[in-house]
Image (cartoon, rainbow, N blue to C red; front, side, top):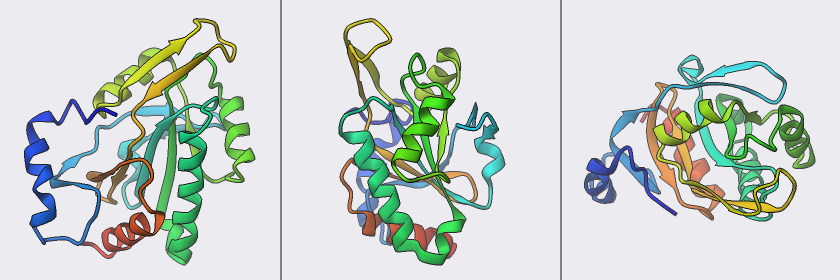
Length: 196
């Protein structure tokens, strides 16, 4: 997994964030918080989604693909646990999945993927490769096709498996590694939603 290439100059500061004691956040905290790069894509129902228009809600943002055999389904399961942990506060959080496989991940495919996971209210975002590449680059997401070059199941994709937490003011606050305990993420979200 690669770190955010866009934010490489601040990685040293980020690595010291755990010593700051200003906030009780876990994972790799952005100190100071950085504006989340804006982007526009379409969700699984064809509706437009723009990051800048999501002010007022916290966002958990993940990049993956529907043919993923392990990391992506596990991350969706983690999101479900986070939502469960949040209880009544879950309505103040957007759970967002952005594809790294535009050739196969049509809106219909993404919708089915989320429905199989039991999550009709999670957002699954798609778009053209050109539009998605801009988003991947803005967030420092590594995407590499492995194996066959056809659009069937003949290839897999190696990709950044981190989850990004964006606060209600539209700022990047934390990056979590794959496998972070959902209770920790929920705890951080509660802190963020309290205005910390």
